[in-house]
Image (spheres, rainbow, N blue to C red):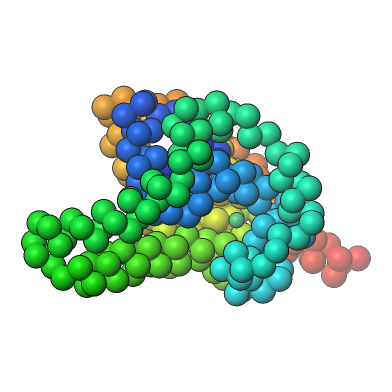
Length: 252
Ligand SMILES: [Zn+2]
Ligand SMILES: [Zn+2]
């Protein structure tokens, strides 16, 4: 989810060789969080209209709504209309993404439910129900909740060192649960940076894996933001801006 549909397909923050794209689309199917096409389209709408009615998981509608409640409701009309305006031509131009979109349900039933049940049953004689509930359902639910924390916890709790005017925040626990996706104030300030954080491998397993894959050429053209650009953004929209404004107001 983190290296594939998020950093590669939603944000195009790096390029991936075909073997890596195949592995990522298979892992994505095993996770089953909708198709890559729909996930990436919704995520692009989230970045364009963060925390407004057009954001699919608008965090201003509460923690539960941002976490998983949005999946239980009809989409807000603004989400639908703005979703139609998002350019997704690059997504379906990728034959792997198009194939998964057209064959999602059979792929998910095998990848997310049958395979995790059959492997422990066949190879080390686990009972079918134990394998289904632990390796199938519990693993699926745990990974879903890790991802959902990015939309809920990392939009509610934590610091805003890069931009105090937006809700996304730097949230350590989310980065632990979602392999480096909790550095969310940075990510919304610089969504094209493949590290999704200023701090490289620090609680960021996804960046570590992508850098390892870069050594064998599977991940390349990794986009990153320069330290000067980060410093300039902090000076413009970081917390000290409001402190300065408060001092000026006080003196006035
Ligand atoms: Zn966000
Ligand atoms: Zn993103």
